[in-house]
Picture 1 (cartoon, helix red, strand yellow):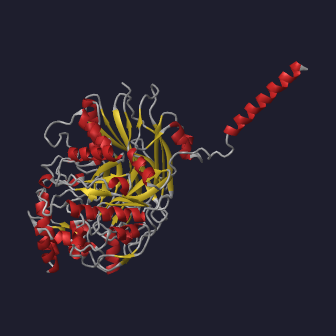
Picture 2 (cartoon, rainbow, N blue to C red; picture 1 turned 60 degrees about the vertical axis):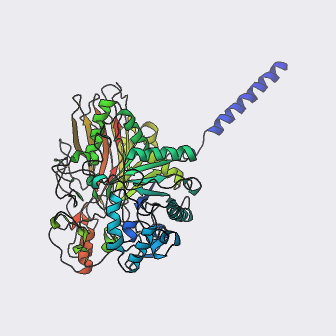
Picture 3 (tube, rainbow, N blue to C red; picture 1 turned 30 degrees about the vertical axis):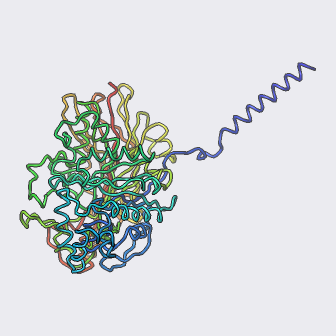
Length: 620
């Protein structure tokens, strides 16, 4: 009997263990999912009347107005026009210039602290006399480019900064709409654009312990990084910076020397990627992915190209254009890594507007322009956006504006923490304004059928890595393989093609690039050279500035393995997705206002997305 009791006890114990084991295995296959499943669309670079070069040239919208518009409300623009988005954005960061932040609204309100300063009173009188642009803004621009602060008041800065933070706190609605605190650091040494937007992860409780570090403090990015490090140490918070418009940097954005003239070293490379993991690759002042002079075999490279410097004329041949465009910079980064052991240009890609209207309105049929003066009108085609002091032929015109762009973030939820962490891991991508969804994964063990699995993303994360990541230590004799999924914007155009852009550096240190069409619509064929040479065609009705989705594909999903892989070469891969041709904002305006435009004005284009890259590093 005793032996029987023991046996029964053991069996009972085994049953308990078995029951517990079953409890840890969930029937629902989704119960333990913890990977990013949502693409959130928004903007990190928008100016309101709190920026001197917006408020003093006609922008009357506040940060609160900007957040209301981005979250889906109907607002009235500075030129008095009602405007609304086709659907709300998921997040927004108002990034007003830190230099003399908030001065325009203070002038309008006769702020006593501002009027107590010599230049504040002078500016107030000029603004009251209707001379805000020529009397305040233009002289301010000259002194600012020289690093001269005409106000020098921390109290005034703090008042404006508090209002910026308060607006973000008021409209931040976790899970629904995220309002992010930040500003723009506007470095312009000798007129070269080295601007960065500074993005804080935190709320006012932490960000309010600091004031913006501006170009009045320093024009050297390394000093900005020191400020950011001090912020994190002081508050326990997190911050990053995002450069933009390398195309207007006069060869400075991705140069291989530091600002002090010394060569980039390993510490600089590590620091730069610690503080600047992303790059704004497309916006109104030009698309910065590639230049046709640098990427001579890319028929899609000359998109939204702004490469003439109005302040210096056509100096393209004198500039180091390899230090201005993202695709080439990614390759230069590989060269530097090969040489110094770290890559200073290992950045992900985002898009923003840099609009100075307070409105994130870059839909081609809803384009509100760069400045208040370039808001919709029959005359905006004739407006000089940036006059050239060299020669009128180098003037930049409003019609040259690019209706771009937006950032997509793959995150688990729409909150400050989740979005910021996705930015740090570079799981983001840029679009020229479209809200197409794009996935990009790399690994060594994907199979062709994986591209069509119903659990595409879950499986891709389980055995590979997403955009923004690294791969290495591949099986001998095996090439990396990739899974790509692109789905059209539900309010936009069908897709033309998916391309993988590859850059690599050989054992001699020479850089190379190649474009592969990996998925195309409408039954077109991809040749042995990896390209589909047949164009998708066009469904545009030029007389009505309209198009139809009777060509292209609603989605393109594919598996691709690199046919030219060399395990010894460092490489970088990113995806570019092209929509079918659609009318530009200029074409919509021409139709709406019944204005005939000169032939040089683009009437059709192909919107696109650029994913953050995936890097391959040899194991040795």
